[in-house]
Image (cartoon, rainbow, N blue to C red):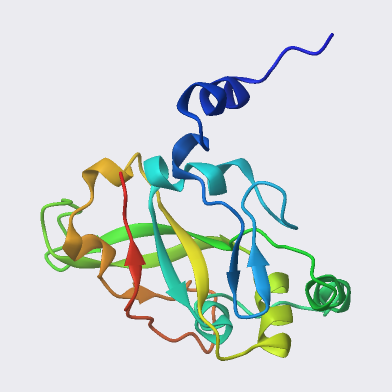
Length: 179
């Protein structure tokens, strides 16, 4: 007999998804499913505790990250999406950079991408529906959690990974923050 996981027990008790997980939701022709979608990871189901969500077009996500070398797997992801398969939200790991270099969360500043997951999914989406914004999870580094964030954090500019040769800054326009 298989025992339920902690997540399953929480979901059963709360009558929903643990950690503010989204139910599968359509964005254009694509379904985002942070439980069972291609590329979904456990942190996707816990964004309400770990960070926040911004909506961006695929090109905006790609401009924040280094170019992906070979196009291995992108065709398979695109085929999956075009056939109605769901995907998990891509995500960004970020550092908070303050204007006064103090590193203090109470100081105004911006985010800097330090790592990411989801370039293949976003490249596939760019081929399928380039002008449709999808949810991207933003997970702050250094022990910063959703409960620490204020509106100026979630609306702050996101600067590209330093390894992104042609990176472009993204200013969030649609944000979900539900700690």
